[in-house]
Length: 296
Length: 296
Image (tube, rainbow over all chains, first blue to last red; front, side, top):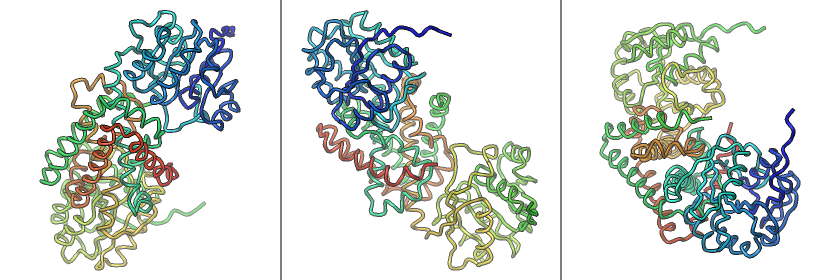
């Protein structure tokens, strides 16, 4: 039997103990890399859940008080809250404390960290785990969420090597594959493969659910619609923040998507079956080529 | 032990031995309700698969020849082919032969049947099984496809009671729940919960798959995108036909969807987080209310 490794993180502070932050805490606990997890959040109910489920060992409502003497701080809050959180914790950070985040947008988070963390910015390691479910909150967290999933690391030119090492080690312990990306490329890629699909799914359910006959209509839906809009179950607040934060990338993607729909509409109105079939076929082939083999 | 029931259908002809027609044949065989299944199709390879897998007992390429003396004919071909099939089989149908279909659009199919089946129209029972996967062809067929799924029956004023009884009995033997709908209501409902989502999914993969960086981009996709576009794996020909056939219902639905996206775009461009969040939240709630409990 392997001898359990000694914890390398005496104090981990998770700000925003939801699916993302909670799963990070659980994974590090399972890997025996962390001694104490302090959770910070706005919802007492959620913090109670987190304590009861062993996601955290101690709850705090004041982020500045919580981070004192921490080895690692993970910010798992919606990206719209990050500037305020950086500003609040900056004066309370010890020199040794490494800060990282799990935000879905990176240019805005990095800019906010640069602005608010000041001289502590070299200890900040921007990151984004490509994982999630349509469930939210500490009760949805599980230690295996990150296993074999990509973790994007975006160290900046100022980032200290030791800080980068600690964050990389922590995510590797969660089972994630570490991938490096530039922040602008990151935001373009995830605007396309994640933020745009979320807007598409939310908009479809908003349309159908807003109809007077919504109950009867949706009662006839099959697995196709349910899969298509599964991600419309995600947190509205989190996705509001992501879309607003990444609107620079998202707006042109959304425009291009509306153009696709208009092209389909034109073909449909003219009864141009060959145009429609060509579009459907190339989509079917692209899916088969790039999206099927990756299925779990 | 139960004594196996005697087959009530001596000869079943399935025109279009794909996922839908093949699964119908397999389910009736499993229920021991059918003695012989004759498959008609355009692809020799697919008919060979169907024979090898026991989906059909005999293959025919000529639909008119195949239907001679049949008790039941199921047309499981793309809806665009139905007028031609009706015209082809009409002169060859015996007086006793009940004809049904599994087309995803109903107003057009019923009109074509009325036009081409002539005096045999009272023996035609329009139907639509609400089931399917993203796979096509006889090899994708399985006997359990219809278990606990809705089967829409749309008897017309001319439809003979005995014909309706046979078709209802056959689908009940497949395990389906029988639901009656008016054809116009059917086309509006499935335009909304099925045809529109397919166009949305095809358009998204067409957009992303058409980019130069498609391979790299889609390599970063997660389960969200994969679920959202799963139905873009469906048959392009079948969906071309459905969209064209149901464009009367689909065009206004598509316009309303583009309006939803434009409203989201406006809110995004103005940074109106509250508008965006309101839209996302009501979508999330509609999904929770009407789309989650139905999950398998």
